[in-house]
Image (tube, rainbow, N blue to C red; front, side, top):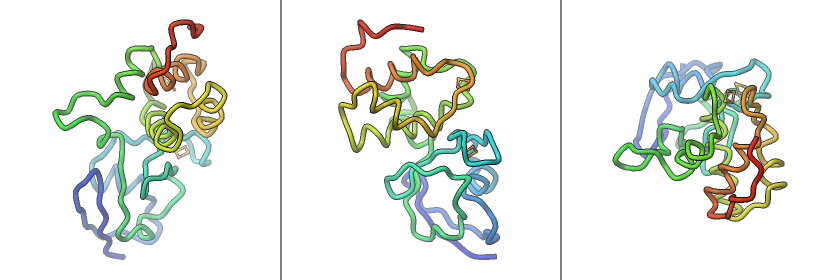
Length: 161
Ligand code: FES
Ligand code: FES
């Protein structure tokens, strides 16, 4: 077991983890932050994406024990201070960027990382950036639309699916 301390959604947390404990399992089972989902066993789906030190990371691919001192943000940290939806979450809602919602936490976290490094992405750039996130429901069109809308771009002529 290793003792780790990290910042999660702005709060310092400490715990004992086994060397094999994945970050996603520490977040969900150790900290009760079940908004981060597990959708595969193969590092493909992106449902588990969180931010680690400002970068989008598939939390099923990293060990919690390796993240001593890291700054982690999960989907629970995206809502604003009053607990209402953050701008990107609201855009997903407004533009029907989700159906079952299983992929949505990872989509939002990946999209947030994209907008942080590229505030006005093109449609092609959004699609390219979200290649590591799989959605089984939406066909992606409205997800892309939501991300473009959240970036402040006019999506009135963007084809709906
Ligand atoms: Fe991490 Fe699928 S659960 S990529
Ligand atoms: Fe169902 Fe994306 S909304 S998997």
